[in-house]
Amino acid sequence: MGSAGIDTAELVAAHEPFHRVALLAEACAETGLHDFGGDDFHEPLDRLLASLESEAHLHPVGRWRVREQVLRLLRGRLMLVDHRRANPEVVGEVIEAPIVVCGSPRAGTSITHQLLATAPGHRAPLAWEFWQPTPPPTVDGQATDPRIQLADDDLRLTTSLSPGLDAVHEYGARLPRECGHAMAFSFRTDVFGAHNSIPGYTSWFHGCDMSDAYHWHRVVLQVLQSRMHGDRWVLKAPGHVQFLPALFDEYPDAQVVVCHRDPLAMISSLTSLLSRLRANGSDQVDAARIARAEIDNFLRQFDLLMSWIDNGTVPADRIIHQRFDEFLLDEVAAVSRLHDHLGLPFSDAHHQALNAWLDNRPRGSLGVHEHSLEGLGLDPEAERIRFSRYIDRFSIAKESR
Image (cartoon, rainbow, N blue to C red; front, side, top):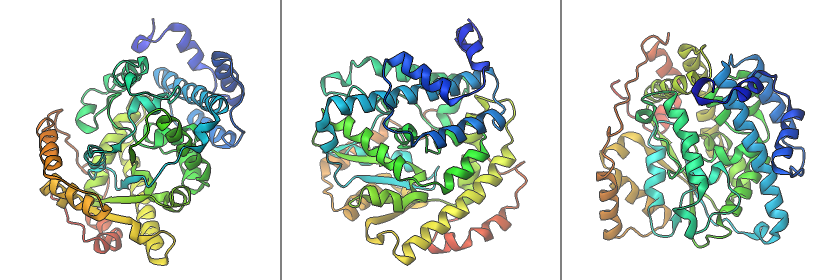
């Protein structure tokens, strides 16, 4: 066995250049399937592989991890296409009025997602379900499906390579998962850029047509609900905020919760997380470079959000704004306000259930996430001025750190 318990043959394969044709052939050989549902993913995959090869500075374990991820997605895409062909009724599955949490990362998006998903009749996609959506999950298989352990092993490898990562972001197969992992079957997602320094791909991704990504997002949800009907999807990915027109094109009845946080505190926390994730695959991680890139990225995203709201590109009446400081004061009260905005009931029993849920997950129970802007080469006040339009627009409170 090689590094991190990887088979020697796998490490040898990981040293080979990333080539789309070879990876597609391997995925087909492993599954016995050959229909990828079109070639619309070729360009994003080619761009991704080129950036990984020339920019990511991956070490052997990093190359192996990326290669396995790409192959899993290719196998998953083949299986999704095959399942829909064999079960044409899946195409008719209706995704009705999903609730979508997005906005600033590190602003309570994950816990807001989880708390909203606890309401009766709500369902959040779980990590193992996005990891391999087919065959569709069933009620009886929720505790025994073998994919749960396989997905958990994969996720725990991520945390084992970065001790303390759970204190920054909790990982587990049965935890709700971000939508980027469903959109990854189109190879248009910010997941790749979170784990790797791939500025070429990331620059292209920020300006690409995301309609195909949201098409595959719907495909995955249709498959996942095809044998477990009745619940309303509660979804989450901070990155949805930069593609709201495409999201509303795909889901016109969606209701969107946009989370807001002091952008300097967010950058500090996010840089810490991304640095840890990228260190799993590369020995060359530049935290200052990450911080500068993310500042530019979020200035662009927040400007887009405000412009779209002002010019009517997105339906402002279907967007709810939540401030991180207000959420932290009383999480249950914040969720109650969201229910009110969303037109959902909020019973005393549900109030008590949320309090119990939070009591079982006290803040800091997985460790304390220490992060700082120190050493990132930033002038906080100058950067705060750059974000002033956004800060003023949403009355965002300045944090002390």
